[in-house]
Image 1 (cartoon, rainbow, N blue to C red):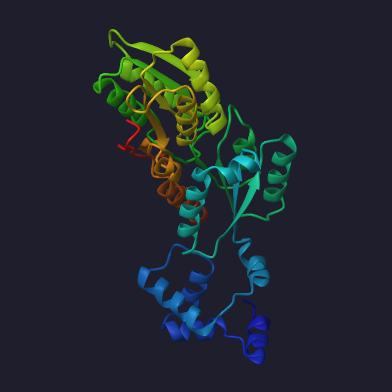
Image 2 (tube, rainbow, N blue to C red; image 1 turned 90 degrees about the horizontal axis):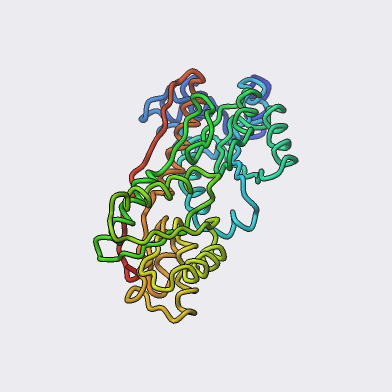
Length: 345
């Protein structure tokens, strides 16, 4: 806040930064660092200043502060999917909860943009070039998407949710151990005595889809007497239904399906029921995500849990660290998965 802003605040009765510092028993500089989102503040001072801000009702003058700090206090979450998918799949809601929780301890606010067309890519890049955002979080990248490289060239700190398909240097990312999770699920089906084990893959232009297929194949490698069947999906329920019809046509006696998402597994259950197959008696089914969907199917769905909300929290930490130190060396964060057993397997 500038001197003139401070004088106007006193005249209008608005709490000032100086009053916040006095209430928190810290220096004005420390109070300013908390308001500006600096990481160089002790936990005690951070809490004291935040408590003082709430007690006094202090509201920073963001317009004046941005002229000094060259910060917009805005983080952009860019999703390379359609609106129908983003607002229709529980994965994205859980991710945003984790992001929002982590950012709630900072002055940063989260904005959402879709970017699955060249025009939308251009809008995102313009936001960065115009200085409207401090950093960008990217999720659901497909193939060799140029957006991460373009944003970094424009000077934006970038962090990814999901392993990138191509080499984009040292850009940090957060992901679940997709291959291990898929391997565990498929091995579980094998150990149950299932021998005609199918998989419904995710998109093969996304690392998650590729890694989950690799885990399925790894689990069955060297196993004799196993009939392997693969059908492709896109993580959505309709693709799970269609893929299951394809699998049943190719092998009417299949006895297990590992689907690379809960929504595809729910689609598989629907098709199996229509075909007169009992789950799990005739066909065992396992999904991936352990989303709310898994707890509301009939039968309830065995699924590989990936810590989606934690992924959101961890990727926010990676971006915040870059905002505090642009030269920070941040490696990838890979979170473990866990098989959650329910009625379908």
